[in-house]
Image 1 (spheres, rainbow, N blue to C red):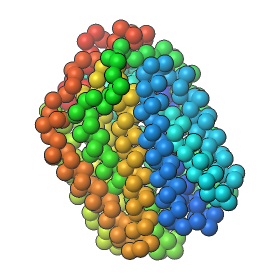
Image 2: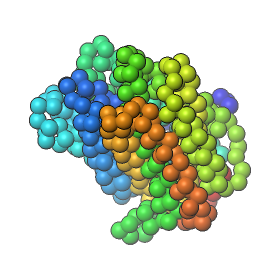
Image 3: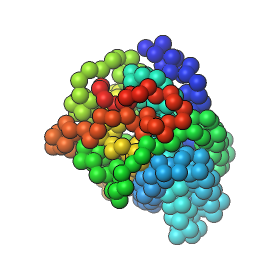
Length: 419
């Protein structure tokens, strides 16, 4: 298991790209909890915290595909770094001005969200130019998902540590400064500087002209909704038990479960259509979310959170392969950015729904939002089976084209032809 991942990390530039992307995505990966803690510290309600997080998520949803398309057209450095700086300035504005003026607070989070750089989609576009062989790229997708869970585990703990050492405002400033440094590390690397997308058909819908991709995005909206609702529900659960540290333990357990699941998933060479495999994984993911509504004691709840996370990273890793199979040629960054967008919109909807559910009902109601999201994601995948069964293309991903300056991709290589 470990040997396969080490082989990937030994490839030139791979470790730098992965690390830089993870650090660069810290602001986005921790924004929801950072906004909740900041709002509560400023005297705001859970509903306001959920609304600000929702505004950030929706703004990110608007910006990601637009910036992803810009990356496909103009390259990574000219888009990623300016976007990272502007996003950090938006969060800095919120941290320094507080909630005294709500219109200004909403403007700040919208700026931060719209300008969030599409580093996640950019990394997946770079993998085929850094690695050789379809198997390595698939394993890199799994490693990518595992690394995300490490970020989602360490990120909230880092935020809560900064809050305890200083303040929620300081946490916002530090996290976003780190994000700029991460983006800078990525765009200064040779693969990022030399990467070019494959030629693309001029079409105003871009990647969205793929029916299979639309089906996948619909399902992952609800996966995002489930995960986003857990963010607020876990804070409410921690408040019920009178300890802020409980939130960190629940999120760490969720991330640990996903880390274990991702490592096991990436250790195996899978056969068969990834679309069918994704339905099974999402079904198991939904089953993992349902017991959270029981809200038992902290030790039991922590164990349930770990169990709920086991199938998250495999679902994400498998979705990467499905995106690669269904994205039209020349839209690789945009297609992956749409996945991030839909996931983000779902997370925003989940945080917006879980806040009122906790205040008007109970903590169990807010966890019920997560269970409903997991079930809805499975229903979408089952209902759109025919669309997902017909990939748009079986050709190379964008980096495996005549425009791949690195020349690292073998002729005819497809990063997502087989699962």
